[in-house]
Image 1 (cartoon, helix red, strand yellow):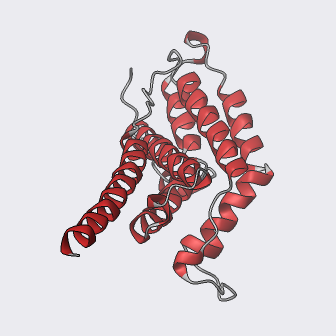
Image 2: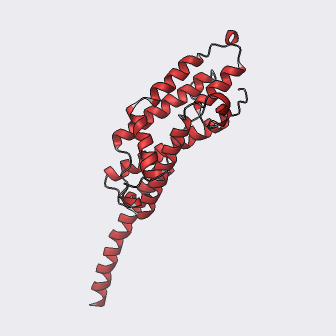
Image 3: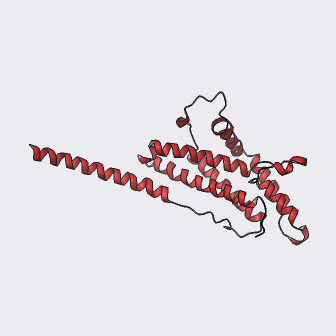
Length: 211
């Protein structure tokens, strides 16, 4: 694989977005199942930071190209920039990469309703917090289950764009699921339930032996 300046930034942004997506998926799933640990202050705070990371990394990857003399100031994690770097490096007669098609795919994403929703989250809640924002920080309503599926589809599409841009086989970025948070939420609730049940047994034993 050739060493393009923006490649490492794009890969890191996509990896962080993918990791944040899966963490949020675990938390939302646990909440829907009535998991009490998922409603703790620690997990609520963690969920807010995950939303922030996911939204920021995705909008960086989709940042529009900067034209003219300011072109080099475009974000290093922008897929537009990566596509341009690859296009400028390769001889069109020696590569099968359709850079125009990749750019059209990025434009289509940027015109989608969900991209507008991402920008709205970024501009009104997480990055700037507009003057009309009336919620407390921990009361921010994050992504719904449907939103998470939209994000998942978007991450898959962005992974495909990078792979196509570099002519790599699918999975070349090695985006894998880490389920430590899922295990923590499940086991923590199990331990809590076990400790509570044993505590009640202990109180009954103590009352019986003290009478």
